[in-house]
Image 1 (spheres, rainbow, N blue to C red):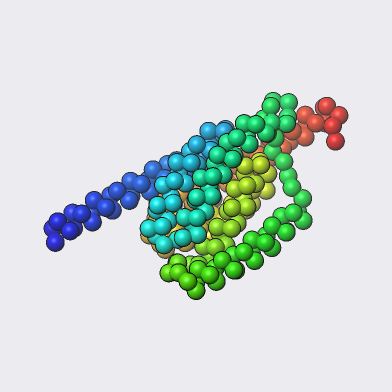
Image 2: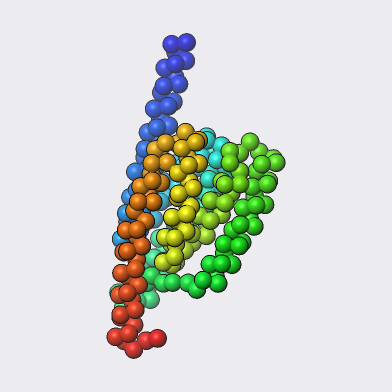
Length: 211
């Protein structure tokens, strides 16, 4: 029993260390994303890779799939932010999208989550299949908005992260739950920073006589 107990303790320490590394790089991602620093995307790569393993272990399968998507989107976002510049500074500007586009996206997310949740509930041992599916599909859309620097991404994250706090805590991922508490607390900072960028872009266009 002593040997078994020591082995389990070592495994728990290893998982906790992995979760701590995932949390640290996820925090770095958010701080850098608020500042519109392209190095947020390499941080996202590391965090997503670790979380794929952690979520598979927690039987949050859609969250594991989501982090695989995050990994791919981190490369897309990095190149988009570096090569998508259209303003005077050569950087991709923050933009807003019209509400009908968001309404259509939310409707599609709800439909996909319902179908995906039913499949998980019927064919797997997934924990919280419908909630897991909903947050996953919503996060896929929202990550794309971040990569395109769409301002409304912050409102989506506020809803997604608030729900995720409960799910992660109930699945024993306490550090990750606390990370998402921090995310929710930092969202107003992101909103304020990106709103300032919107104002600067609008001011520059007005000065240049652009519509």
